Amino acid sequence: MDKITVDSVFKSFPPRQRGSEAIVALDNVDLRIAAGEIVCIVGPSGCGKSTLLNLIAGFDTPTGGEIAVNGLPVTGAGPDRIVVFQSPSLFPWMTVMENVTFGPRKRGVPKAEYEAEARGTIEAVGLSRFAGRFPYELSGGMRQRVQIARALVNRPQVLLMDEPFAALDFQNRLVMQELLLRLWERIHPTIFFITHDVEEAIFLGDRVHVMTAAPGRIKAVIDVPFEKPRLIEIVTDPRFVAIKDQVLHLIRSEFERSDRAAEAAESAMRT
Image (cartoon, rainbow, N blue to C red; front, side):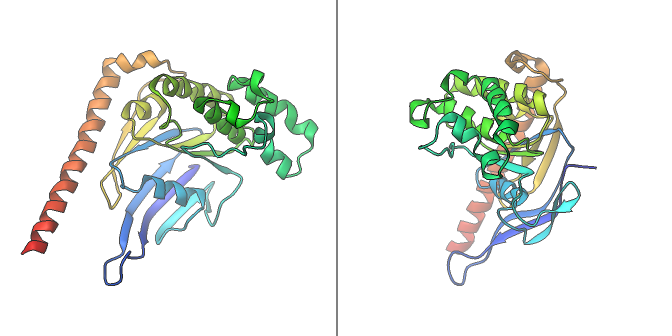
């Protein structure tokens, strides 16, 4: 059974102004993600990537179609799905350890059950020496590690990641990408990963889904042939470069199509 299924999903939003048309964000999107897969989503800005993530997370509902996790329709947020956002949403008054263990403590899990797991997860993200520090004492990359550790300590079945490394510098992005794959090796969550970075999508993903310009549809699905674990050196592999060229071409064609449509609409308004 697929871990996540997205069937003929359509999502529109009310018009911004009276008399204008509804805004269609997603149009007839189909997606299948197997348990333990890492699927990366790329596409032009405004193509509905984050809208799709919010629907899978249960933060919003489709206008049409159905989304299911473990064969059960998504009707709201749930502990089986945890979101990692671009900006770490840590509690500034809590230490690293307190932030990471917030979920288990909130659920009433006995300390003896979660403490060892939390320490192991903090160690896995390389922050053992900083367990007693507060977020303001950490760098941006370290805060993002705390956010990922806080997600993983809950052993989620599905990890939804919305451009989690976008705010980091190039070197820290590489470190975090390799770290995510090492952490994936520990618990094998199903990961739905949004990014604007094509190299990041290919390096992390088992498959890369390219979305069209708005309204968002799945334009292409590209399998990534590299086994895990992966090292950053694969970005120079000719197969990697060929996939990157293919994805960039698909995205560029969507930008061009969107520009042509905008020009045609503007011309029609003038006439």
